[in-house]
Amino acid sequence: MPIHAFTVGDIQCTVLSELESQAPYDENLTNFFITATFEEIRAAADEVGEGDHLTNAINPLLIQSGNTNLLVDTGIGNPEVSGLLGALSEAGVAPDQIDIVFITHLHGDHFGGLLQNGEPAFPNARYVINRAEWEFWLSEEKLAEGGPRIDGLKKGLLPLEDQFSFVEPGDEIIPGVEVVDAPGHTPGHVGLYLSSGDKSLLFLVDTLHRVVQLARPTWHFVYDTDKDLAVQSRIALLTRAADDDQFTLFYHLPFPGLGHVKRVGDAFRWQPIDS
Ligand SMILES: [Zn+2]
Image 1 (cartoon, helix red, strand yellow):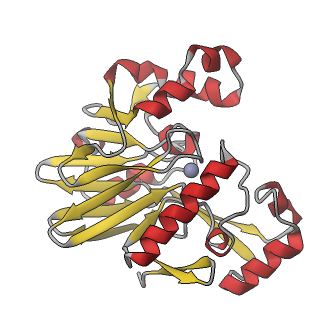
Image 2 (tube, helix red, strand yellow):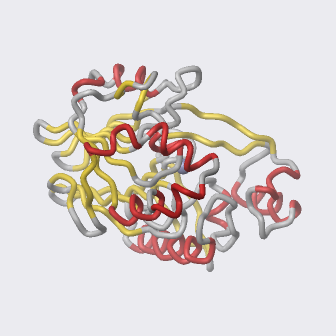
Image 3 (cartoon, helix red, strand yellow):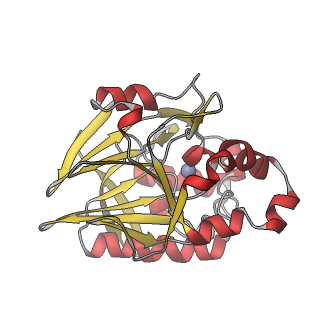
């Protein structure tokens, strides 16, 4: 899968494409944008020029600073579909050269690549996560509740439990890479703010999932845990990105997921980089 390398001052960054897929603009989309009708979705798609299909990408980020290789999120990890390890190799980094894996939140398309056949995919790495996210999903009540998400965590995350350490919004994972509070998609969902010299990048991860959501930021998205809080975070962070003319990365927007957020009335537009 493709990679896209760029720098943020002295920090080397590479978007590693795990996969990209397309879905038709059909009635099924009302299952995802649950407060919108199909006609409203279609109108928004026309406005942003999305055509007949909308794209879902998975864009983990490799950050290289000093001697540290930091991987942000690990994709789904299913070897039948995952291009992540191939993309990492393309970037010139072997899995055992990853020093730190940061997990932005505990959905399977972000932590699923931690283990391959039950073995750590990044055998020399330590793992870092926002404490609030860990405490929400791995509370005794949640673990007892069960269900597919919890079963996924028991199988795909808990074997590595002892190697996790915790950060909070405002903390730096490594110098120049700060954790940004972005709650709602999950209770402890976070982004990152990278800065070096006068350059910066805001990684907003799953603050939104599709290009059409910039045009309709108040729509509720089915996989947001707290939908009202997700809308609040989305609008606040999109506003910050637009007003600061901030170079921005999203995990699920079409590869490489990099560009700028522009204001249009009460809403926004996505201006992807030419890659
Ligand atoms: Zn996601």
